[in-house]
Length: 194
Image (cartoon, rainbow, N blue to C red; front, side):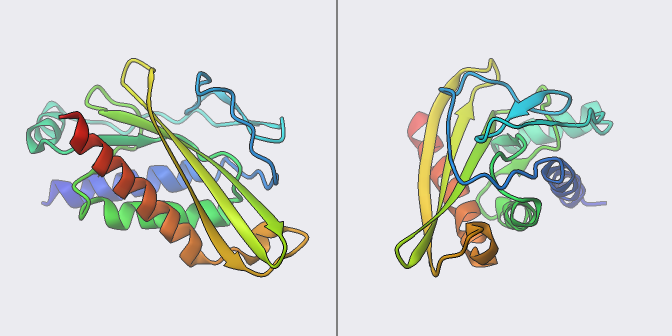
């Protein structure tokens, strides 16, 4: 039995389940300075001021051996909090890409905050049409296990075309690039911390 594949499958499922709770399509991005909390069982204000009530989900059972194995690998243990500001179908694409590329980036995704969590990452999205293009802005706050924001990653993806609902023309490739950027930027930043 390959524990890495099982953990990655559980992490992907948790990310997808968590993503289904976030369904904002607001066009603006307002950050509260990174001091808010989000995660299972909490209210998360989205950029439009609407609050999504996330279902409380019990963490999957873990064994001492599994936790010991995770720590022994030396890989960062990341928990991605529910994404704010992007529709469910776009978050699903992002989550699938994170799950698919995390192993090659040397990162293990966790289904929930665990004692071995290295960092929690909270993502905020906005899509804006202007001129002849649509821009997807994404900001990622990296939090320590103690809840302190220790790093911020900011990027944007630009796609051709505009629409009344900017998210309607954002292709899968843009969300996949966003996933690649956050993991790559996190790994590069973490390398400077050791």
